[in-house]
Length: 574
Image (cartoon, rainbow, N blue to C red; front, side, top):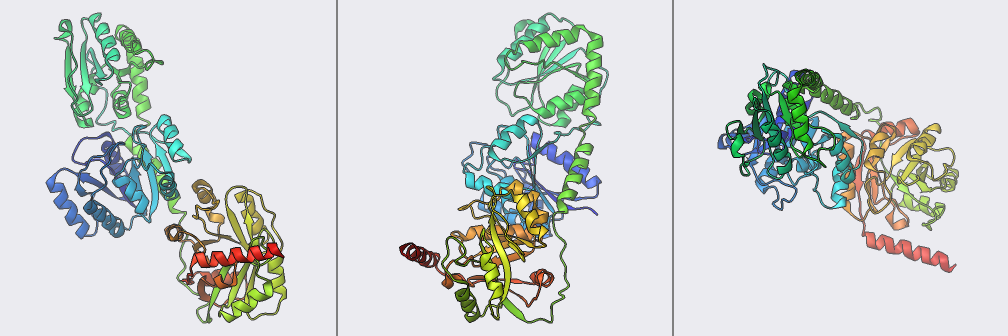
């Protein structure tokens, strides 16, 4: 069964661009594999904008939807995405109900960045250039973006290395993709094609010097970027040198298919080099070219003078390019998308406890057994009864004594024995339904394993509270299947946005949700809780969580924190 996939390009779909060529080829082949693919992009063409508005009204059913007029996009851009375009993007993401949202070059202030930041779908990011990685500038914004990405892709090891400095993670290197039907070897002329850049004059001069020694050869200087001047051609070569502008594959194919030698620019497009390889051209790009551009001319001369070497390299380049087609690229993405889709947990519509009474349960609180809390266990149980709580989880920091004391006490409140365990730099994990204490300082994975060895329930508290140590995005996703309950509301967080981020994450993967007060004073008990069906053991607890509702009963955090500080000061005086 195919997936609903959204590919988002930051560049005007109506204009030639190497990123759009990558997206177009990938979309075409993904559709052939049975996926429903929608491309979102800006456009400069009025007809595209009209069709885009109609598609948004009709339920996002078109192959390509232009969300609005094109706007300046660069790493130095200071112009934000227009409000109307943002609104159209939000509408497309809502109505599209996509399984996968895949943004290209999200390191720019653009549609791609906003789509990945705001989407509730599984997120994939592809980086294609080291020059488009300057956004967002702030580390907190980058961490938020990273927390919403499920896979990181780059079209070369160099791009992956640079991208990893700003957005750390495990990058998968993919091909830019090439259409080997459009680019294919034809009878070769004695023709050299050199990708031209106005800032790379030494490389161009070296090719000119070589051409003077090859009277039977021609040279085409190929411009693949928007017009930025014209190269100066020596008078002696005027009859054998021409300049061509071709910014898309369709315009380059006829030229490259008959070219015998291709000289890439130092900062040229990887796509054009791959197209030349698919066309069976020999490529003059020896090692050390960036330090010594003159080597390009020497390599071209050697290829021009040795027919056997030139033809052999052309055949090898063609063979290599056939492993980097859009079809192979799409098959790799298909495997990735389907693997990511398995992260979403299946939902169970049945409620085996539907005949039970509703109770209020606070899954996160502390007693005097914690180093930073002064509430005695009997006080806590009595107060919980008074507040009308039907169940509580005792989750003291790195100790299990409070839970054992509460279990031994007589109370009408159901007590879930737990412990909030500090890991080695990846935040904290709460174990519920434990039978013995778990030592602090173990790795995130080992702590989860220790909880499950006791047949306990792994509950992840305040997963996005950046005021404290939390698991990084890679660790969180690596152990997602081992987390049983995900806390989506913690009443003690300073910024409500951290709770909102947790709720978004849990909904994205259909995770079982939890909530707690994280109370350190009696006045905070029950400020965060769940309304859930009555339960009597671990299995019934997990079953009840499936239909639980989050209750938010916040009190002033300053008030609660001042009470905590006062209690701690009182203890020190004693």
